[in-house]
Length: 352
Image (cartoon, rainbow, N blue to C red; front, side):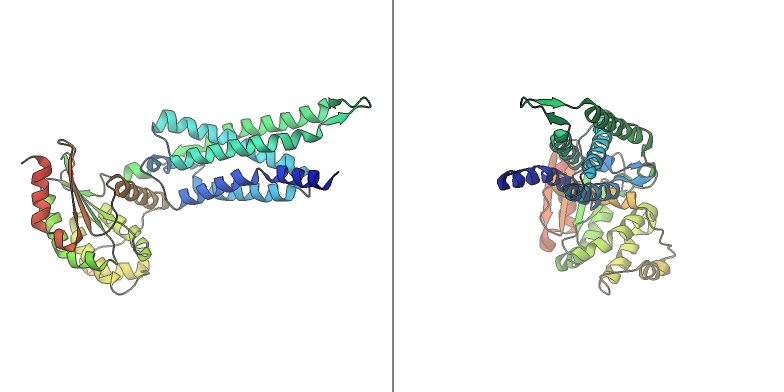
């Protein structure tokens, strides 16, 4: 075989690695909660009780290893094809759920499905390149036995992917019973007016504005839904999001005092332990109860969707909006965000 032909063949065998790597990266992003509001519902589904993103990361890493090693161990080409077509069957079920059950598309999930389909398209010609023989006349003849065997295995893997996902993919009830956009909101649930208070636990301007924010929030929640949104401009804020979400869900009556305690704790440590948090809230007669992984992921993705929807670029920011009038007003910075301005913005967007 000429040298350039060998390089071409090696490149062709490794081409599936690109979409496999893309699928792995998208799975990592999904695991980290980097997505839009459309992903919130998708994140509630589990495969036999396990969250999907870590399964995807491990699965595509295995596919990547098989793809790299297949150039040396030919049998792994068939193993790689079985893995990829099994994943394709599973992705068809995921797409069906998004279309007919959720009713919206998760960009990351659609991207993973397209990457898997591309990998299957690239691995197929490589897999079947060895099922023909050259006749003395120069013509090539298909060997039916290996062709039929490989086709049957791929079809079985594809059907197994569909069946496994159809049987094992279930929506957890945690979102409905523990955390939802309604469960972390304060004030009248039926109000058209909404106030989103976007802060970062380590933002100096947020700390300056916090007293006015607290005063404005307590006044605004008499007539509007108020939601506190953690925007991790400082990465350390990610360490406080699980605690803050838990208290907003479970300790609404004491939340404002708990928020003061968490603010004081954030000035002492950037990496609080559950014991640190419990010590901070114990004087208030509160017990910290952790949320599970799905709840924290759901809350984080909800925050991301709000920041993207209202194009929030910094903290502190207060978005005041009214779904009845369609009006929205944004307040930014510690100078502009005062309790009076929050109430004035409520009057403005509500048409009063």
